[in-house]
Each structure stands twice: as structure tokens, then as C-alpha cells.
Image (cartoon, rainbow, N blue to C red; front, side):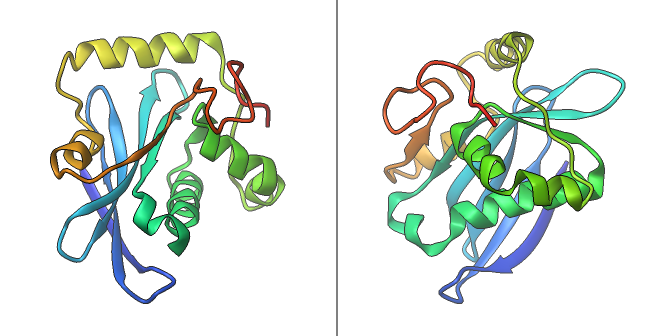
Length: 169
């Protein structure tokens, strides 16, 4: 399933946010007008009575990092969660940080989020294994395009103020 919303960067350039839902790893992708991918936010949909999306990885190109694309991606994720009525689980440090800063406003607008649990990591691990070598998200497209990407992984010690523990919201 693809869902595309178009918006503009702070510089005025056209950027599309596309959501690709797959059986294992799904993704929000930021795309330029020429369809080149400039960033992604990967997630797994948790099974259960209420939909939860566990966001575990975000990648944004360093050359567009300062143009507000991270904020645009975070805003799109959160506004979609309100519109589509799913709970956000921020395992990704970038999303966890955004919710630390803006979580009260997000909840006030009708959004819902919860802290990650060990079962969430197991679910992500199973989803990654089911995809074997081929990642179903746009993260693999970024690497194939030959652009350097700055990964923001859940338990990386580099640049993650949360260290090896779950992000605290």
C-alpha cells in the first residue's frame, strides 16, 4: 500500500512523504520531485486489538539534514497517527527525542504513544529475519543510490543520549 502526501521543504523545494506498508518492515520515505529518496523512517506494525507502529530506524541524508526534513518526517508520522488512529512506539532515538519535546502537544491533539518494551525488539527482530537479506524499506534504496546516509539506530552509542537503554520519553 502506498500513500503519498506532498509538502515543501523550508527552501521551497517539493518533497513528498510516502508510506509503504508491507507484511514485515514498512516505511515512511521522503522523496524529492524526481522520486529520489532523501530519508526514511522504518517501522513494524504490532499485531493486536489496536494498531501500534514501532519506529526503530530513521535515516536522513546529511546534505539535507539542516533543511527541516527530520522535523517534517516527524510531523508527518505524528499527524498520520492521529488521522489513522494508531499508537506510536518510539524505539528510534530521533522520534523518542521529538516526543520528549512535543509529546504533550501531540497527546493534546488526539495522538497516542507509549514507551518501547522488550517484546517490541523481538517483533522487530522477527520482521527483519523474515525479510532475510532484502530490506523492504527505502533504506536499501538509499544505499543503492550511492548516497551517504546517517543511520540513527535504536541502541547506537554514537549520538544517542539514551545509550544502550530504551529511549526515555
